[in-house]
Length: 172
Image 1 (cartoon, one colour):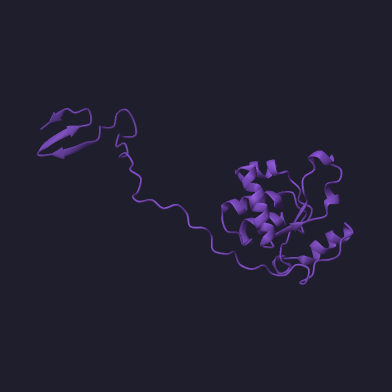
Image 2 (tube, one colour):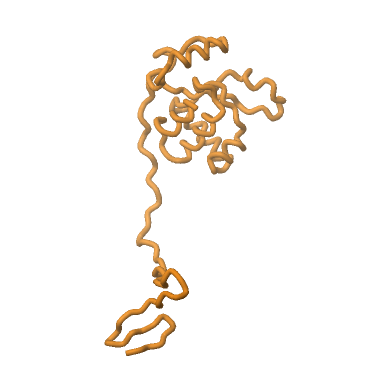
C-alpha cells in the first residue's frame, strides 16, 4: 500500500505514462518498495500503454533513479524463459510516515534496515515534454435544448416576431 501511495501522489514523474508504469510496479512491491516483478505485458495493461512504451519508461525511470534492478532471486520460482526482471522502487527514507514499521518488516525478511544513506531524497522531476497544441478549438454541435420529458415544449427561438420551432414550422 505504501509504494502505491508514493507512486500515486509523491513520485517525481514527468507524465501520466511514467506514473502508470510506476504504479503498476508499486502494486506488486513490498512496503519498502522492493521485489516488484510484474511482466511488461502486465505493466502495459495496468498503465494502459504499449509494451514498447513500458520498456522506454522503465529505462528512463531507472536513469533518473526512481527505480533500480532488484534482487533477481525474488522471481526465481518463475521459469527462466518467462521470468520478468525484478525492480526496486527507490522510495526516499524521508517519505515514510513510519519507517520503523517498514524496517521491522525488512528485518523479518532478512534485509538490512532502510537508512537516509541507502534511500536518499530524489531530485524533482525534470520539465515534461510539451503536449500537442491546437490551432483552433474543436467545433461542437450545439447541445440539444429539448425538455426533460415527452410533455415538455420544444426548444424555440424568436426571429423577427415569429416563433420558430425545431421542426421548422413557424407561428406568430
